[in-house]
Each structure stands twice: as structure tokens, then as C-alpha cells.
Amino acid sequence: MKWLKGLVLGALILVVGASALGLFYILPQHDVVLITGVEVKRVDHDGVINAENPADGPTRDVYFINTENPDSKKVVVYRNEDTGWGFPWYFKFDSADEQAKAQGYSRDTEQLALIRYYGWRIQILSVFPNITQIEATNSRAEPFPWFNTIFFSVLLLLAIFIAINVKRRNKRRNQVVAS
Image (tube, rainbow, N blue to C red; front, side, top):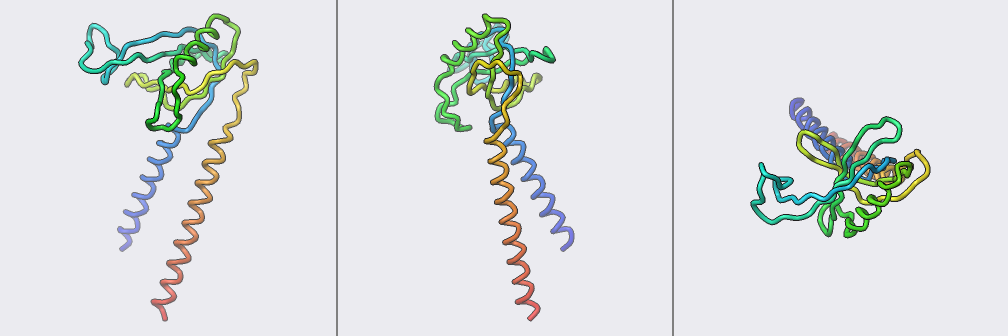
């Protein structure tokens, strides 16, 4: 019976960890950057189309925005693609407009931009975070993530509520069995 509790606890930890990683991937994040350039690439289901990877199915244009952190000078490339009606539900349909803003900001080498995005940059897999919004800013400070804080607070309260109810139910069950 002890090994079953350990197995259930291990599975619970695995599910919570996977859920936390998934939420970290899809919840919005912010960066203050200098936009250094923009480009458009033709891609299909297995990546950018080039001489080594010819098109072998339906293709689409994907916008990319090259940025640099104004303090650390670290370069980050973002993808700027519509999410449409698909998951994650950002309902973004204005990638061309966001690309035009980015192109305008790239002309001024001193103009800082606040970028809201989701996702991770994984270089070895050629994965790029997707921008959902770009706006000009004069401050290097990133905004406080209110949405993420409220979301995780509600999630934590829900988990505590469920844990208390499960504990109460088990206590009642043990009292009924003991009598």
C-alpha cells in the first residue's frame, strides 16, 4: 500500500510539473527590446523552405522580428504569426500590422519596444516565441505580469480548496469505518 501512495504522489508531481511547464509556455511574457530588423520567410510543415528543404506541402509566410536587449545586448529572434482561432487562444489576426509597427521601430535605433509574447526560444530546434503585441515605450522597465499573477493565485486557491475537501472526505470516511 505504501508503494501505491508513492506511485500516486509521483504521478501527481509529474502532472503538476508538466502543467506548470505548459502554462509557462502559453501565458504571456514581456520584454523591452530594441528592434534591429524584420524579415519574412516562406515555410511549410517542416520548416523554412530553402535549397536543402524544398516545399513538400502547403506553404505560408511567417514574419520574424530580430531584437536586441538594450542592456545585455543579447539577440533574440521572435516569430510574428497569427494564432487565429487555434490554441493558444490569443485570437491574433493582425500579424501584418504588428510587422509594420516593428519595421517602423527598427528604423529608429533609440526607440525601445515593449513586446508581449508567448513561447520559448529553443535554438537547436529552431523554435521561436510568438509575438502577440508590440508597442513603443520609453521605459526599460518591464510591466508587472498582473494576468499571470492573478491566474496562478486563482489556480493555487483552487488547488488548496480541492486538497482541503479531499482531506475532509478522507477524514469522514475513516470515522465511518472506525465506528
